[in-house]
Amino acid sequence: MFEPMRKLPGRRSGGLRKALESKRNALSRYGMKEMSAMLGQWIDPELFKAESSGSFSRRRLFDFATTFQAFLWQVLQGQASCREAVRQVQISRIASRDNVPDTSTGAYCRARARLPMKRLGKINLAVLEKLNRLTREEDRWMGREVKVLDGTAVSMDDTPKNAAEYAYGTGQAPGCGFPLLHMVGMFSLSNGAWLGYNSAGSKRHDLVLSAELVQKQVEARDVVLADRGFCAYWMLALLKTKGADAVMRLHQSRSRDLRQGKSLGKEQRLVTWTKPRRNTQNFPNK
View (cartoon, rainbow, N blue to C red):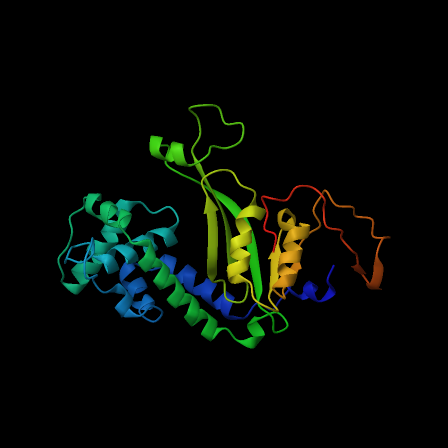
């Protein structure tokens, strides 16, 4: 084990990440009105203005700002329904003496489905840049940025269109289960920010999905923290070309004979890995 990394799991309880977690928990308890006021401190109001053309260019009960804030409130609640989100919009509009929508969820659901991904990406980038500016040196590990890499799968609606685009789980009986979107995401351990993701409709190994993400998000002196599924020769080689390091559990297929290699001190050992000879055409070669 890389000795200084022992300090990672047991870091002090303070720091920007813990403060943001506290605010996130507070947001989930607030109503949409209070949440919107707090968002104003983080997101430039210009990003919420009406678009020059398209779905959110006209004045509507569910304009871009209202739809975004209602959807975010709904996500933070975890299990909140669309009806509850609409109720929050009603409460907010009554308080500001603005036009109040009825209790139907149809208009909100249609507006939510039209949220433009490009604009959401701009908001995410703006929040990320602000978080990076607020991150202190003591929030980092020994002055270095630790980036967490992990994979997951998200179930999709079981519709013919999704079934044609996304794969089902391994061993799933025909006509049962839900299509799955496989994805790999990366987070900052210093401030908890979501840095980016890569996804695929068909079943692909997390290693394959992570290649583009690592190329884009990892910089020199970063430390990538991941589980044993990412512990492969080419991943470590890729990180070395970026000038970054990695902390991962040893993959179960690799030898654990610690008598091999050179001892560097207590619980530290230098081991040389040989490039595998098997066909790696599906993996990056840089």
